[in-house]
Image (tube, rainbow, N blue to C red; front, side, top):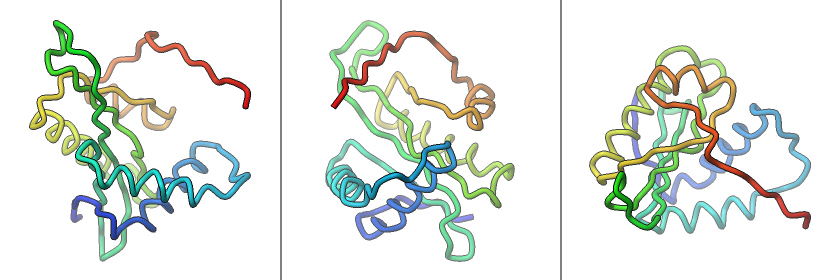
Length: 150
């Protein structure tokens, strides 16, 4: 397995992986979101606040995961104020249960530590929860959400 950082040259594969992740999580591909994803990832790759890994085997991308750095006001438990949002964790179905996601998550945690991130969070799928719990992530009831009607 080869773990490497994604670049803007990987835009097409990153978009395809994101769309497959959404479908695997149960979303229905009811509209074309390619342009929105392209705009999002172009912006993210040009910032210093986003890092995405690609995992390759035999020159084929089999998994991915990303770290989005978000600035919050500093606090006593997080003096830098930087929080890391882990997202786009995805492994193609035929490569699951091989420890790839665990290795990827370790790389993300190491990167967060290098950047002095004191708080990592994510939204876990039911499939991903066991791994995150094994790695020390805790479920909480802190977040409230609001989805305005558009």
